[in-house]
Length: 200
Image (cartoon, rainbow, N blue to C red; front, top):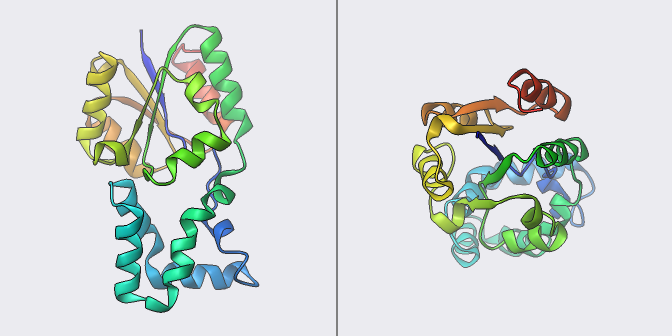
């Protein structure tokens, strides 16, 4: 039986990092300028890799001391960034579960923000047999090691895994690890791909 593996951010939960900063700015353009200035997405990726909140804030303080409090507050306001669910994907998961498919999740996520995701969306722990969180493992997508780790933990061969992720790089990483993979651009296209492969 094929193991079906889901990314979480922008596949199950909409991630809007700007939501954590709207209290301090009058427009999203101003927030985008801040995120560009501090290299937010690269900075955030290091937390996905396992860097702690304290280390992340220290990195900001060393280069952009005027933004230290604002960026530190991102962790406190993180819940605002993942409030919206992508309901079409959750419906697909329900359909797959009804067919008794094995479902796992593989996500790049900070250890400091993951508990808030589980608090806001506790059914994440109900629908998946297992979840691999990058920061807990200190390895990230698209590196092969994290795909191999999940295979070992789930007890499956790479060609028995089907993966969906919104990142082209992560989809390529999965395929390089021997997995089947689909780039997520919306629930309906995912449903079509799953049907074509005989999973739905």
